[in-house]
Every structure is written in structure tokens, then in C-alpha cells.
Figure 1 (cartoon, rainbow, N blue to C red):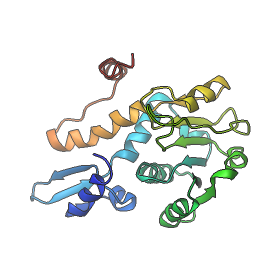
Figure 2: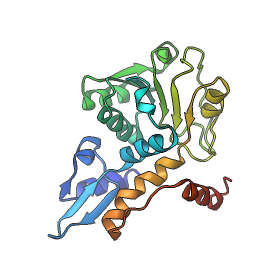
Figure 3: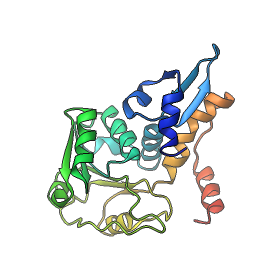
Length: 218
């Protein structure tokens, strides 16, 4: 489900969980035993689940993150980072006003920064997340200067086609730990599947390989 469908789902749900309320969008709908239409947003959980699986203890690396982009995906990821105790989440967007709107929504631990100050702020980051479509197949590349980024900082990209974006390649070449975006797609589906079918699937390495082959990425 994509924006604006997630916003329509948000408005249709009779009951929202905390994540959906804070993120302002819904990607999972289900009827409970009383027939009430419930809404949740599992994108943030998918983001966390991916990092937990691919890079255990990644969130012990520090407490400062930079999120690139101020669209719908960034809302879920900002929520996820705050829920894991990140105390400073910088939102960098080419339109500063959009970043500021998100910072105002999520509170004092989120700070909007201008895109042209990104290089300076990278020196403070423990985690760098790309939530934009830049680097996706058919889209322009994401070209940023990583020179100031600590080599211990984790770099992740929600783009999964291609699996290794330019950002991830450049980061890995300089020694940063990296995580691609495929696992977020898989992990965000887990809670919904459980709600609908009563069975909680497990995102295993084997499942990941199957999906990669189906997508022609392996």
C-alpha cells in the first residue's frame, strides 16, 4: 500500500494503534472480534526488524541519526528511531519547510536541517538513512559527500531495486557497515499477515534468498 492509499486507510480506520497515530498513515487494516476496523502502520517495525536481523546491536552504536527525505517513508522511520531511544534525529530535505514540518510533528528530538549543511552534520551521525527515491532504478542517483561520516556509522537505504544503491556501495567501500532495504519490505508484512491469518511468519535468510531470486536480484 502506498501514499495516498495509506492516508485513505488512516481516515477509514475506526481504531488506530499508537504507531499509526504518530506516523499519520496506515498500511494494515483488519477487523477485530467486535467487527471494528483497526489500522496500523508497520513500516517502522519493518525498518527496525530489517536492521535487527542484518546488523544485530546496530542501535547500540550511538544516538544520533540523519534521515534523508521528508516524505511518507521518513515519518515511519523517524517514529522507529525515536522508539529505539535516538535522542537526535536530523531530517535533511531539499525543501527545508517539509523537514521542519516533520520536526514540529515529532517534537524536540527531531531537528530539520538544510540539504546544503548535510556534509557538516554527517560528522555527528551514528546512523544515516536514505528514505528518498534517489538511487532507485529509473531515478537519479543520490550523490552526497561522505567524507565527514564516521566509518563506524551505519548506513541503510530503504531502496531495494537495485539492492545495492550507490549510497550503499560508496559507504561499504569506505568501510561503513551497510544494510539494504529488502528486509524492510519483508518485515513490515509480518504483523499484517499475523492479524489476517493468525500465523506469524519468520523472515529467514532462506526467505530472503527466495525473494531475491523471484525479483531477479540474485
